[in-house]
Amino acid sequence: MAAPRHVVLMGVSGNGKSTTGTLLAAELGRVFIEGDAFHPPENIAKMSSGVALDDTDRRPWLAALAAEVARLESSGQQSVMACSALRRRYRDWLREGYPELFFLLLDARYETLLERMGRRQHFMPPSLLQSQFDTLEPLEEDESGVVISVEAAPDQVVASALAALAAAAGPA
Image (cartoon, rainbow, N blue to C red):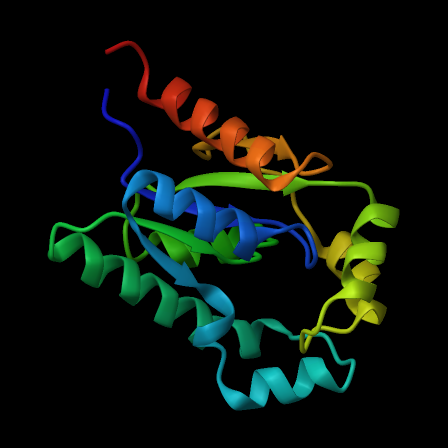
């Protein structure tokens, strides 16, 4: 079995999706897709004002990300994407671009993430973190992916991600 061609780093805000994704993509020689860069200005304005997105807001954003994965796949490229993908239906919408996505659910304690969010400049305010935890639906048994703790340093998180991808690929 081959290693997953397209990987999504998912989870709540502040868990290091972008940091881990950038490092992992570089390690694997893949394209990095920053999911936040695909949000329309209306979504960013809504979140910046402390209002959580609803499915009507998320659907076009996730469709754009699915289209980007499909575009990369059609050109023979592989990717690592940072995208919250908090609900099963959001992950299903992403799979419309490429059905064999592999998800790495980045996991940390609420307190750890709240502290991280307080130190960074981002449009997502810390006040929305609890709503993200409330929205998060764990990976289901029929979804390809694993949970990785992000309580460690970024290089250790990337090592865990690489190990998970190697395990997903199975024996050589």
